Image (cartoon, rainbow, N blue to C red; front, side):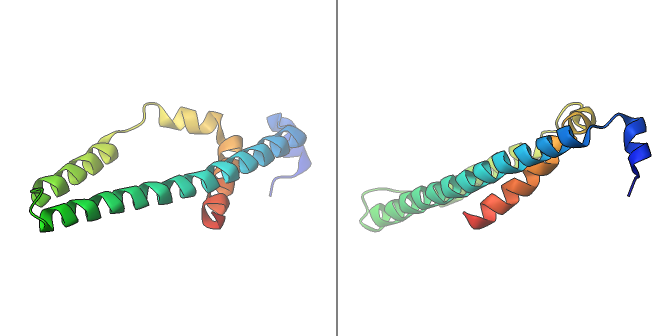
Amino acid sequence: MPGPEVIAQLGIDPQKLGLELGTGAVIGGIIGFAAKKVAKLIAVIIGLELALFKFLESREILTVNWDKLGGTFMSAGEAATASTPPTWVQTILSTLSVSAGFTGGFFIGFKRG
């Protein structure tokens, strides 16, 4: 752990750093909690929609191409994982103190939600 002289040489204000970490943790916790609730709601809506499709298909009211429907989900997932953020190293370094607190708070809020 670096001593006070190293922190002074780097020009880091411990009070400002603590405030940024704490604020990021609180905001991350709130967003993590809300994200889990929204994810559950979306999962329920999609599940109900698929159950409705299956019911209507069993009554021969609707014909569902399940292969095409599954392929659409797969291509959307591949498109989401293919993108790379531009200048991500610079972005991470410039927001590291807030991001660290936010990440911790997000995971705690997501787990508690």
